[in-house]
Length: 274
Image 1 (cartoon, rainbow, N blue to C red):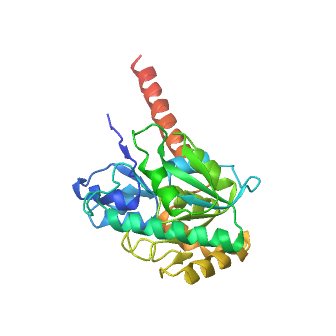
Image 2: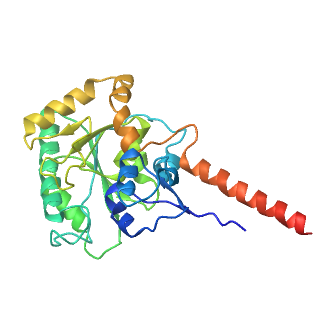
């Protein structure tokens, strides 16, 4: 009998493992066309690569829209206890030392924005409370974010998504859940002028390219002023490339359909044998 295999790569910079993938009939559900190009570099056939976006984002954000706004800014923390203070080469895909420098600078800019504009801020934590003895992430944020803010601990479920849905703008360096927010039409600002993630934010429509507060503030204000429709139109290419979620048929629905079809065929084969 024919056995079907399906793979779910995570995000594009972690697709480095594609180098070890053997060309086969396995179908891979990838985030978008950008990820398809990465896999194509390793002899994977276009026919086996299906860009349907994020599995978790498509599941949780499907049929969910912005709720009552509680915060002007939702900052997505990427200060990971596990790699805090690690050497620059410890994590494939990004430079950890530069990432922490970028996070610190971004937090200082958000502090300045709060002082000049009076914005309300929530910080979405990466680490779960009690996950490690010392919460370096919380200490790091307290050190560099010199203003009032709400700290939202990671509940291991969907606390990050809930925070994004109740915020006007999501600010991050380059994170998967921010890609999910962008695909849902939530305004997202990317900040990585020191290229902690290499060139990944270069193509992003709303990306700060210079590490100057004036530049950050300008792009923030421009993003804040555009309408929902204008924003969605401006990010069409980015969504197609980086998180091509189909809200009519997101990945989780596609997987349910595929599994149901497989079990249906299996049941038919059993009936024939009987």
